[in-house]
Image (cartoon, rainbow, N blue to C red; front, side, top):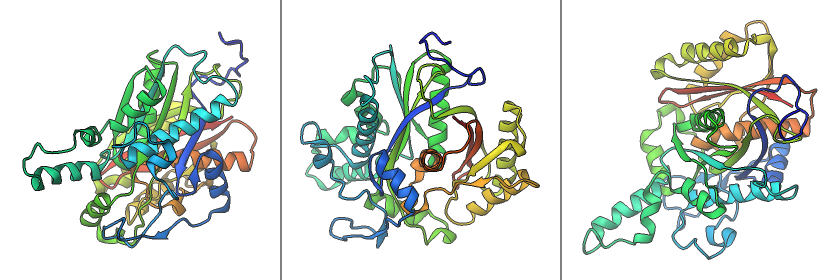
Length: 369
């Protein structure tokens, strides 16, 4: 028995995921995401060029998402899109929790860790533009300045919901979700927090679309950008009666883009070694499937590991577009959605892989409960 009086199987030793929610092109909230994953429906839409004056014709947007309509007018006058997505996702998670109990009733400290690419590129570019076109460089809207800081979204989530523990932003491209989860695991291990809301967010904007247009490789030109935010609730074992999954291990690496295949394979082997597992113990794999030939490197690395065993394939949520920093967290919520819709015997192990085209890699091993 734990100190909380909840019976915990002896084998549950690592942090556990006890809840989650998402804001995605499938809609707002966990139920919308589960239904979207189950149906596999497309979310791509033709952009209104008056509202989205960028180079893209298509994108996967959160439907009818307007910050002031979703969150109300109080405190949102200058809130940018990525902050609105994050604040809404945290709201949805807390709503789900309060249906059962006060989410922080038994917690001394609640923390938040949020993954991102750069925060809001649109906010940064808009403020920079204003310094050039206004009569004087300092004639800018001061209310919009906080949006230009990378940790604005995480900070606003803490302010809105009274999260008084550590507040951290982690930037690592498409691997950001797993890097943030690893940071959250370390906070729990160090006793710095007892409940951690951990996720990642990415907005669609003309600024992001232009940056992608000028930086993507030729083999990535068919990419359709998406947006959204997914948030997980991470707690120590024994603090929740019905945990969803145990976090067994996270391994990370940085490599040259030409060496992704071998480095990712080595990173997976390290995860298996740390958990004393072998490839045959892996029930399912969720690859990040990045745009272009980077996905080939990921596939080749998995082939090196699973030479005589083929795990169940949990595809990344491709119908919601390239969600960049939020990709890995959406992979986890897709896995949990799949497990909810198609229950399996407990204790099955899933492998999550995340790759950024610049060579940032991360893997996670989760045990579904």
